[in-house]
Each structure stands twice: as structure tokens, then as C-alpha cells.
Length: 154
Image (cartoon, rainbow, N blue to C red; front, top):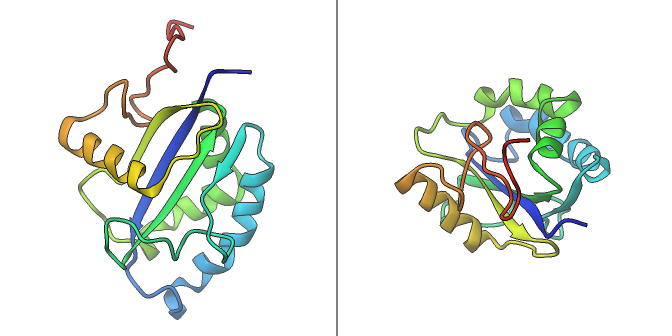
């Protein structure tokens, strides 16, 4: 068992209300994609409300933002889920449903095994990334850092 797990937050600004015809394909795919995530190798936990997803969980006090907050075994497990199957299909359509935003909307960080991050914690990591760029404390998939105490030279 590892001492750390990977937390990830991804927020998106909706182009349309969640109950709109324009977002029907996205909303209809939430439960199936979440089910795939839940069964993926390396998946640990995801934020969800009583709805089973987190589209109604407030982030940054903005009703047009939705949040995805999860914990994974490591960066490789997260990438394996993100870039395969149904999730990859949804990624390819993201510009249909979400505004293009210049500031960082995704952040990764290491948490002690068993820790479940809060939205407030995720907001702090996004702010840190926006203000300071990637570092060992908060990083991105493109510029990731090893868990504390791990050697990144592979």
C-alpha cells in the first residue's frame, strides 16, 4: 500500500443549463461514465452528492461551473481512464458543452492515502496553479510530480 494517492479536480463552465437540450448527451452520459470510473483499475474515490454525481456541488460560488473531484492510485491510472473508452468520447465533445477558459481548470496533487479532498481544498489547489504554475504541491498531467518520497527517474 502506498502512502499517497492522487487527487484531481476538473471544473468546467457550462455553455447551457444542465437541463437544456444542448447538454442532454452530456447529462445522459454521466452515470455510465461514472460507473466506468468506479470500476477502473486505480480508482479510489469520487465526490458525489445525493444525485450520484457532483454537478450540483457548488465550486467558486459560480452556478455555471461544475466540478469533478476524485482520487486515484497514481497519474497512470487516471490517464488510463481519461483517454480510453466512453470518457475519451466525451472529452472529444467538450467544446460543444463547455466554455473555453484560459485559466487552469484542472489540478492534481498528492494526498495521504485515505484522505478525501474537499471542494474548498480543490479550489485552493486551482488558485495555486493559476497563480504560480505547476510545482510539486499542485501540478498538471503535462507537468506531473512524483508522490512525496518517490523517485521520479523511474
